[in-house]
Length: 407
Image (cartoon, rainbow, N blue to C red; front, side, top):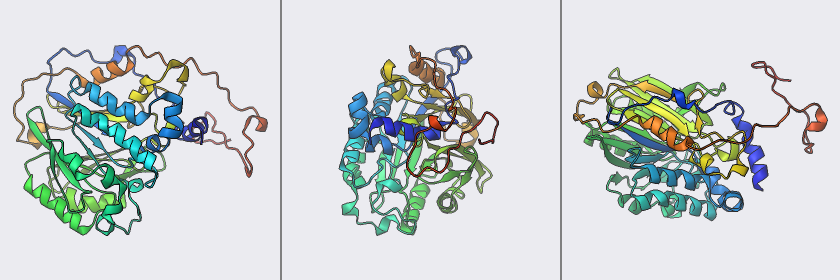
């Protein structure tokens, strides 16, 4: 498949996102230096198409890949944006048996290894040999799993944030520190066994004083409106086994379901657990390099979520299209939610504010000098002769300007 065909095919899913535009610079808060205690958590959603088409499309056309540009940007801006940790939510590759895909993923994540930026990475359904819902991690032939060959426990151990792994090596936990507080990140495989859930429960019990983020590939899904999130069956299993009764869990991260969504649930202690889904794989160029930056603003008691693309700003000007915008501002793409860190996590130390508005700083870094593509000259199709005549086509559907109306 040539890059142009991949582009056209994957652009279909971006229809609702194309309208998102950059927030004008005047709307960005101009915060003074040292006005808050905050840090940024980088989240990488499904990178599967970046890995799959690295050799056949991205490298020949661009000389680099979206995956590589994402991790290179995180590494370059880790100090300036106070990024102590990154999380990959799975589907690292698209075809589990494709060696070139794993090589591309390996090289991309190496950017973080080389820069000393610690991270957690986990296996999604495309990263395991058998993704059946009835097959769990303890059923795998572990010696034959490419994920463990590319991202073995030994690679994770190279970072001082590594806390441990279960007997399969597919489920791990990390502890990172930011602004005087330690955080636990529990990363779980695509489908976990009861034994793994018991291991994870033991990890939570042993670190019950730490604010905890659970990352797995499938936790919440998205309804047909493309906006409303809901708990998936696998997510409900994790909720019952690990989240509901462990008040330290305040945030979950996942991909898998196409789109962006957020769910807020009350746990057994009456506190809110925020669950975030991000997956752009069916958008232009397999996701167009979009990832999440979560700013933990401890001083002001909120977490800001931004969806940004280092890939877009790395492209040559003559490659830019109307789909290319560095920051998405649509529903569930740029937002914030309150969290009273002091009352929820009494263990927080008082930290002298050292940061400015990291969200605004990240957007400024991404958009500085970016002018975008020339105004699009695309026109709506006038009749059936304007459509590609593909063998076997029975009908063409054209969305009109009226919401919900199809022509």
